[in-house]
Image (cartoon, rainbow over all chains, first blue to last red; front, side, top):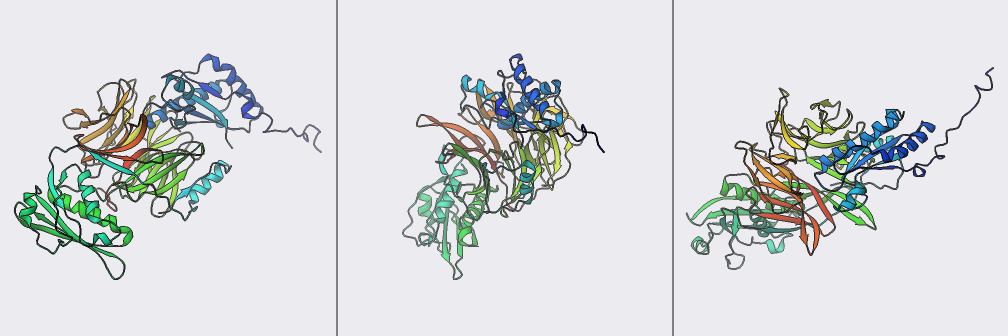
Length: 130
Length: 449
């Protein structure tokens, strides 16, 4: 006979904390791969929801602005994604819950090569993997 | 050619998608054609004057053989077409033409031929080459081709003429691969195309709502490796063009990109982030475990083999910004190759091993450069400022690259082919949208040693 605590069932509700309820984009300065302090609270909120739902896995998708060679920019976006991954690791999220990938310059948030576009394109997006 | 079509609206879990991709059995029976517009400009340094008379019977055949040949020779940058009217369509490969009259018109060579339909529906293409100066017959070609191979037959005649008159192999019968991006009701649609080197007979090998980059022809000319983002991350595929079948060759943790084939077709070099950062690995082209080739705390990417298979050119920012290096695969020794300015990427080596094409950024302009690998001298080949993705033609005489040109006040993506002196250029554009990521394929069926 098991005790009542062994027969308890604790629910994991994947729909409970939707990814878009938590801010999910970290922006970077020009030529920079450093996660700025202003994004610390965003990362802490992400870490909280990920600890609450250990079955949820995320992509950290790195992006660059539209200037430069496609493959080199893919590698720069990767550098940004891994910087965010390191920040989340420091906040206690296991590597197995995260995959750092890059889109380089292929999916700009704002098309174009102006500085205004660049500001919005140099980013890492945090999204759930299916 | 079979085409793949991928829809983003289907929500499948990644493992299932991977399984479907590995099965690679989703074949759709339709084919898409997109017309490329080709404009040739510039005058070559040495131009052989040649007259190509209308082929007897070509008015009745599906393609004007003489015009295909004329365009092929013009794009090579080595010929100047001389129009000498030949009375009617009476001159063919069997007639002795009035060579003195052709010579007086300015041509040193004359091509005359015929295209006739055989009883079984195929076409018999024949051509003879005359030297109008010496007044002699330099030989003839005869090719039987099906309707769908008629353009290819004309291109093979062009290559025969090119080799007869220059001593070098022509590339009219090679193919190019490239990617287009069109907006479809606000959603992007990407296609990976295979076309003849003249931009005709374009067939889509892959249609996707997610980006496709870095297509790379196998040395056999039968497969393309490329990077697809359909799985929400970059994954490297190898795609058998004729069979319409593809398989994943690199989908390791993180990003997988920048595929390039070894000259014997046995291996690919790829850039993987599975070890952290971006590093270069070698992987058997049939699939298997990757072997790391570079180990640095910097970005190492865009590896490409030298034609002897013994060294790799690649991009690294280990000096603080991206430069081009050469790795000796046997000894592991690395030497720096690029020294102009602080940003050099996208190396491409000519098949004869003598030249390196790459993209240099200076003052915000991204420009195609050509480096002599023996002397080290570097020349600029373009007057555009957004050049990308250079690759050499199979005879090492031309480079294809992507760029942006100002057209009616707007920047338009275009592919360009240029002679190595930058003098003769062919611009390839599509009305459908953006065009980029070209790769020039080799002679089909050839495997290099």
